[in-house]
Image 1 (cartoon, rainbow, N blue to C red):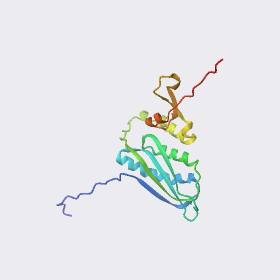
Image 2: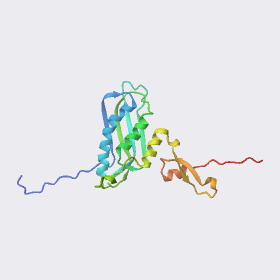
Image 3: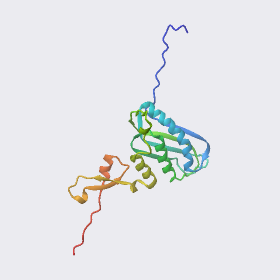
Image 4: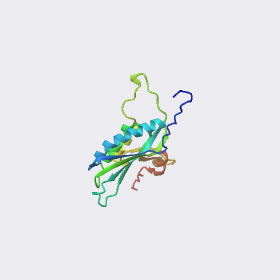
Length: 198
C-alpha cells in the first residue's frame, strides 16, 4: 500500500496443447447445427494461435451423443487438415461445414470438443496502411482445400512430376491436398496407351 515493494505479476503461460469443450443447452439433431458452437470454439482457437504466433494445420471436431438416446451409437469425430499453417478461422469453418453437410448424426449431440492437432510457427503479417494492398478472396490453396472437402480428395487432382526418363511416366496425378512427401508416395503414373499391332 505504501509502494515500498514492487508488485510483480506472474506471466501468463499458454498451454502447449489446446482442447476446448462446449456443452449445448439443447440437443442437436442435425450435423449442420454443430456449426453454431463450433464458431465460438474457433474464436478461442484463433486467440490462442495469435498469442503463440502459430498457425494450425489440423483440427479435430469431436461430438458426444446423448446418453439416454444414443443406444449403441458411439461418439463421432471429424478431422480437417490444411496444406499450410493458417489462422484463417473462416476458411476452417467452411471446411468443417462442407464435411458436416455430408455427415449423419447417429444420435442427438449434447457437447462438442475442438482440438488443435498440429501447430506450426506462423509469424503475424503486418497490415498495410493502403486499402489497395489488402488481399481479396481466398488463395488458390484454400480454394483447392474447399473443393476437395466438397467433392472428395480424389476428385481434385494436380500434376506431379516423377523421376522417370520415359515421357509417359514423367507426370502423375495426385490429390491436391497432399503435401510434397505424401505426393511422392502416392503418385500414380499417367495411364499407358498401347497401340495394337496392325
